[in-house]
Length: 130
Image 1: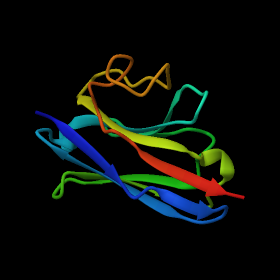
Image 2: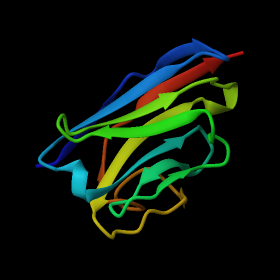
Image 3: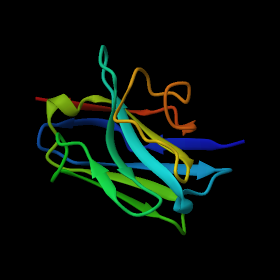
Image 4: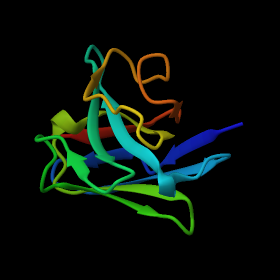
Protein backbone atom coordinates (compact mmCIF):
# COMPACT_ATOMS: atom_id res chain seq x y z
CA UNK A 1 0.00 0.00 0.00
CA UNK A 2 1.30 3.43 -0.93
CA UNK A 3 1.19 6.13 1.75
CA UNK A 4 2.29 9.74 1.51
CA UNK A 5 2.51 11.71 4.75
CA UNK A 6 2.97 15.47 4.91
CA UNK A 7 4.29 17.38 7.92
CA UNK A 8 5.52 20.85 8.77
CA UNK A 9 2.36 22.90 8.50
CA UNK A 10 1.38 25.44 11.10
CA UNK A 11 0.52 29.06 11.73
CA UNK A 12 3.04 31.80 11.06
CA UNK A 13 2.87 35.54 10.57
CA UNK A 14 3.09 37.11 7.15
CA UNK A 15 6.70 37.29 6.05
CA UNK A 16 7.61 34.14 7.90
CA UNK A 17 8.85 30.78 6.65
CA UNK A 18 7.86 27.14 6.82
CA UNK A 19 9.26 23.93 5.41
CA UNK A 20 6.87 21.16 4.50
CA UNK A 21 8.00 17.55 4.21
CA UNK A 22 6.44 14.55 2.52
CA UNK A 23 7.60 11.01 3.13
CA UNK A 24 6.45 7.96 1.23
CA UNK A 25 6.11 4.28 1.89
CA UNK A 26 5.45 1.77 -0.86
CA UNK A 27 6.53 4.24 -3.56
CA UNK A 28 9.82 5.67 -4.78
CA UNK A 29 9.92 9.36 -5.61
CA UNK A 30 13.15 9.53 -7.58
CA UNK A 31 11.80 8.19 -10.87
CA UNK A 32 8.30 9.62 -10.61
CA UNK A 33 6.27 12.74 -11.17
CA UNK A 34 6.01 14.57 -7.84
CA UNK A 35 4.13 17.68 -6.89
CA UNK A 36 2.81 19.97 -4.17
CA UNK A 37 -0.75 21.21 -4.45
CA UNK A 38 -2.82 23.42 -2.18
CA UNK A 39 -6.49 24.02 -1.65
CA UNK A 40 -8.08 26.88 0.26
CA UNK A 41 -11.74 26.80 1.31
CA UNK A 42 -13.99 27.51 -1.66
CA UNK A 43 -11.12 27.30 -4.14
CA UNK A 44 -9.96 24.70 -6.61
CA UNK A 45 -6.95 22.54 -5.95
CA UNK A 46 -3.99 24.50 -7.29
CA UNK A 47 -0.63 23.15 -8.42
CA UNK A 48 2.07 24.94 -6.41
CA UNK A 49 5.14 23.18 -7.74
CA UNK A 50 6.10 20.02 -9.54
CA UNK A 51 9.25 18.16 -10.44
CA UNK A 52 9.07 16.16 -13.62
CA UNK A 53 10.71 12.76 -13.94
CA UNK A 54 12.68 14.18 -16.88
CA UNK A 55 13.94 17.20 -14.99
CA UNK A 56 12.03 20.50 -15.28
CA UNK A 57 10.61 22.08 -12.14
CA UNK A 58 7.39 24.04 -12.33
CA UNK A 59 6.33 26.81 -9.97
CA UNK A 60 3.04 28.66 -9.96
CA UNK A 61 3.55 32.35 -10.70
CA UNK A 62 2.18 33.23 -7.29
CA UNK A 63 5.04 31.41 -5.50
CA UNK A 64 7.99 31.92 -7.86
CA UNK A 65 10.97 33.31 -6.01
CA UNK A 66 9.45 32.45 -2.62
CA UNK A 67 9.03 28.64 -2.64
CA UNK A 68 11.60 25.95 -3.41
CA UNK A 69 10.73 22.33 -4.13
CA UNK A 70 13.43 19.76 -3.48
CA UNK A 71 13.72 16.04 -2.92
CA UNK A 72 16.11 13.84 -0.97
CA UNK A 73 16.13 10.52 -2.77
CA UNK A 74 18.16 8.81 -0.05
CA UNK A 75 15.37 9.60 2.42
CA UNK A 76 12.58 9.27 -0.17
CA UNK A 77 11.33 12.63 1.03
CA UNK A 78 10.03 15.75 -0.68
CA UNK A 79 10.39 19.24 0.73
CA UNK A 80 8.66 22.53 0.04
CA UNK A 81 10.59 25.43 1.54
CA UNK A 82 8.38 28.49 1.76
CA UNK A 83 9.69 32.00 2.42
CA UNK A 84 8.02 35.40 2.68
CA UNK A 85 4.67 33.80 3.29
CA UNK A 86 1.53 35.79 2.58
CA UNK A 87 -2.04 35.48 3.90
CA UNK A 88 -3.11 34.25 0.44
CA UNK A 89 -0.82 31.25 0.90
CA UNK A 90 -3.19 29.95 3.58
CA UNK A 91 -4.43 26.53 2.49
CA UNK A 92 -4.14 22.82 3.04
CA UNK A 93 -1.01 21.66 1.26
CA UNK A 94 -0.82 18.21 -0.30
CA UNK A 95 2.02 16.23 -1.77
CA UNK A 96 1.17 14.03 -4.72
CA UNK A 97 2.98 11.51 -6.86
CA UNK A 98 2.46 9.39 -9.94
CA UNK A 99 4.34 7.15 -12.33
CA UNK A 100 6.79 8.82 -14.68
CA UNK A 101 5.08 10.41 -17.65
CA UNK A 102 1.73 10.83 -15.91
CA UNK A 103 -0.06 14.14 -16.46
CA UNK A 104 0.23 16.83 -13.79
CA UNK A 105 -2.67 19.25 -14.04
CA UNK A 106 -2.47 22.86 -12.90
CA UNK A 107 -6.01 23.03 -11.51
CA UNK A 108 -8.16 20.25 -10.12
CA UNK A 109 -11.62 20.25 -8.68
CA UNK A 110 -10.26 18.57 -5.56
CA UNK A 111 -6.93 17.35 -4.28
CA UNK A 112 -7.61 13.66 -4.64
CA UNK A 113 -6.62 10.80 -6.93
CA UNK A 114 -10.11 10.85 -8.47
CA UNK A 115 -9.32 14.17 -10.10
CA UNK A 116 -5.53 14.17 -10.33
CA UNK A 117 -2.33 12.31 -9.66
CA UNK A 118 -2.33 8.70 -8.54
CA UNK A 119 -1.16 9.08 -4.93
CA UNK A 120 -1.91 11.81 -2.40
CA UNK A 121 -1.18 12.59 1.20
CA UNK A 122 -3.89 13.75 3.58
CA UNK A 123 -2.57 17.29 3.65
CA UNK A 124 -1.08 19.69 6.17
CA UNK A 125 -2.67 23.02 7.07
CA UNK A 126 -0.70 26.22 6.56
CA UNK A 127 -2.19 29.37 8.05
CA UNK A 128 -0.61 32.76 7.51
CA UNK A 129 -1.76 35.58 9.76
CA UNK A 130 -1.56 39.20 8.68
